Image (spheres, one colour):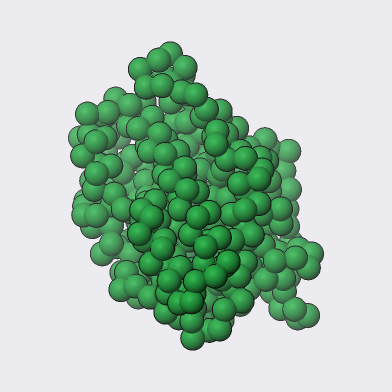
Length: 317
């Protein structure tokens, strides 16, 4: 059993509501976002439009998926690494997940629902009408966060072309409670491999983030209504030439309730490269340019390291 640790650390909370580009409030918030990602690698974003009622609807819509027969679950396939249905694994027996590419597009969610529920009914209808608007909402938040980061670093001129080259993946995840003599580790300590991850979870907690490597200090992340966890990743760290932190995190299961979470992640189609503005005598290049999906393929074949060392060994200078 892995012990859950706690800390007096307060997770940064940033209000992202009612902000318009070019205003003083936008600029001030942009600096807060950048500082949180540099210092901690994550923060909680308060974002309008995500009510307690919507949150309940989203997580209610997820549950029937995990009661489907395994042969149905396995139809959620993809030739891309870490896409499609996954789990349970020998090292993560509590975990299973489904994935939908570009879920902010209605057709993609409907296609997934048709695959899982060939005969339309309440589960099919509830999933499609709930998950699609959720994905659109979170995509707006992702767009805002990335635009703020680019502008705060003074590389806003690259934002539009960079963002147009991104694709997204919506992953819905269930962690069941451990049985007797089973590990309570829902997800082992790792850093993320997409470019940015925006996460939400039901009332069953479990997400913990390492905030102090030297002291092995962990913080439990507990969300409140209208909030999301925004988390940086290894490729994001590489793009920033090491300025942004990619935080190690884990999921520890306590109690006897299932934990559900939903994560929207983005990926770069093509090469991730450090902007030349980030490289100087004080900040020499730390990473060579790399193709994001080729890195994922390499990591999937040989996951020696689950943390940032996987990317450092792949393209570090």
